[in-house]
Amino acid sequence: EIVLTQSPATLSLSPGERATLSCRASQSVNSYLAWYQQKPGQAPRLLIYDASNRATGIPARISGSGSGTDFTLTISSLEPEDFAVYYCQQRKDWPITFGQGSRLEIK
Amino acid sequence: EVQLLESGGGLEQPGGSLRLSCVASGFTFSRYFTTWVRQAPGKGLEWVSSISSSGDNTYYADSVKGRFTISRDNSRNTLYLQMDSLRAEDTAVYYCTKAHIGAFTVGHFDVWGQGTMVTVSS
Image 1 (cartoon, rainbow over the protein chains, first blue to last red):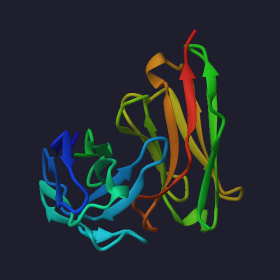
Image 2 (image 1 turned 90 degrees about the vertical axis):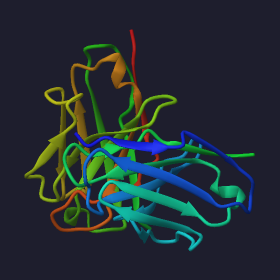
Image 3 (image 1 turned 180 degrees about the horizontal axis):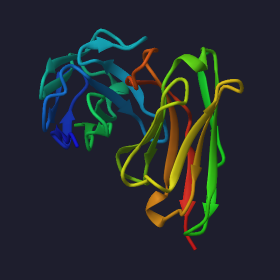
């Protein structure tokens, strides 16, 4: 099973600041990695698929990068609606796995 | 509008059964892998099961293998999850999801239902 480890567990920042979240895979997932955002009481929303492709309707301030085992989600300038929990997910091998999540909170 | 609508959750005793349904609309259901993902209260996301577009291939997490059965009826645009021998640790919100691309891949999950709560308790 491919284990995805996200860091940090919690990131405290202010609106307007830059956020960088990390996802490390226990073995290569090539570029088969996605990022999701989840707000309380809501279903997750796909942000980035296949490492660096923005999903429909996702603003340009949100970007993804990486390949192999190390991936990054960057939000260039935080808006109030960006404070949420973020998950990475791989589709390289069965079983599909998710990271444990990173919480982005307002400082 | 592309939508997934789950139903069938509720309270069930340990050892009991439930059947979840997910009705799809706004896209050609038969062209996409579909997947169940769950989230226990206060916890992260856990993949449960996926099924190919035709229904010929199914995949399960070890935690549910032998107890849960995924199926689909493409004529009714509906995905199912038959849940037997339920355990307390199956308590979660269950989401139905759709692959972001068609063809023969599970994809990532670009459309999610609102979720249905399953509670297993005596």
